Amino acid sequence: MWLKDLSIKHFRNYQDVDIDFNPRLNVFVGRNAQGKTNLLESIYFLALTRSHRTKTDKNLIQFEEEQLKIAGSLQKQTGSIPLEIDLAPKGRITKVNHLKQARLSDYIGHMNVVLFAPEDLQLIKGAPAFRRKFIDMELGQIKPIYLSDLSSYNHVLKQRNSYLKTSHNIDETFLSVLDEQLVEYGSRVMLHRSEFIKKLEAFGRKKHFEISNQLEKLSINYQPSVNYIDKERLAETFLQALEKSRSRDLFKKNTGVGPHRDDMVFLINGIDASFASQGQHRSLVLSIKLAEIELMESITKESPILLLDDVMSELDNTRQLKLLETISQNIQTFITTTSLEHLQNLPDNLSVFTVNDGQISVN
Image (tube, rainbow, N blue to C red; front, side):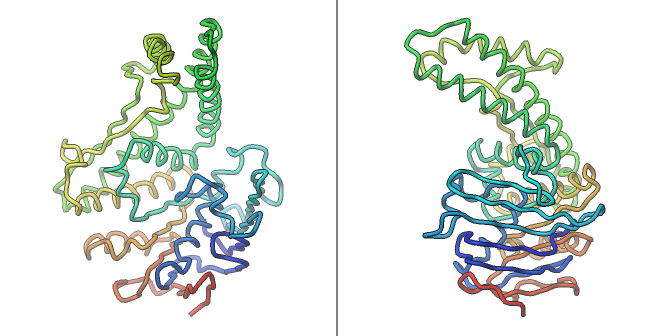
């Protein structure tokens, strides 16, 4: 798949911009704080209906404006698909082929993107919430039912936490009903995640072995907060864990066990990667991103769109070459950079754009 064009209105520092893209490589050059990252963020937002940089939608709307609109034409093997997101104070409206989508899971998945940004090193060193967000974003693109199950789980979780916080006299029967609902959706979420991480590990291990010159073996361990052994008994184990945690939950007035507390750990040659060098961290994240591309292709039968936000300068020549090998294949890529000097061996078929204070011009 590839994004043919993009229309941006009142997003970050973009007032009103229309751009046509190259099906292969698009390079955006400009000084810092001119809007290069904002452009990639708008493409990410069009694909996933949310930003990778902020949880607050209001931050995305241009100063003194009340709403934003992003639209684009996506070319897939089955034909061209117009996508559109309108974001206003009352909420967001998503459209596919000019038709409103009732649910998030009906929209996400039409356009698949893989983003590689400097903050991705937080995958290894950051808090568990960063890794959960990574799973949610990537898995949600390739398995819409996951988003539906996750949304249902989060809805019940919010209900349960609210009940724990606001009720002076807890109705144990009502809490048990909430527990059963939490177990139903939460068990599905954990099984989706477990399957996804196993597949990602299989592709990532191969990529990392190549990038490390056959010296390092990558493993990814899923660490659900419910310590289950047999997936057939997961629901039963989850319910027992909630019952065991109930006195703790009543005291702290929140839910102490469930997918909202899951984590995963990356291992290099069996050792926790958080103890590895900065160079090894970069190699690992690069391996994961390249693995994502192959995993998405294997499931959707389409190449995702690759977004590289100022990462080429972070990589040494060996890692750049590995990334460029992927770019040279049939995958549309967007690169932001402050200079073209360190970009070597780029494919011939490319378009270069200059970004200056929210204005984009073709070189």
